[in-house]
Image (cartoon, rainbow, N blue to C red; front, side, top):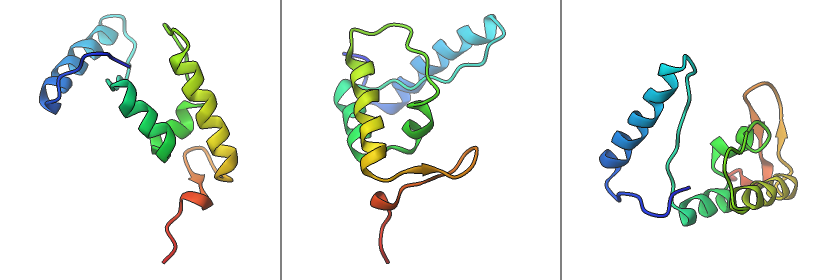
Length: 100
């Protein structure tokens, strides 16, 4: 979560690639997402797919309480949405499903 991010996605990608290269130096692949606070809050509210596994498989390295609070909100949302993990990579989320 960043306070000041470029709005242009290409500039964000350049930052991400630079940071991910650091992982290769230490032989550890890492995945980085750079988001503004409001973007992350929106992802929590709307059920961004990446957050389902992230909410249970994460390691907070540095936080002033924001990330921990948002993860707890998302875990509560998972319960409210009746979401269930059906296998290693699949979640069923009935309350977010679109009825056709």
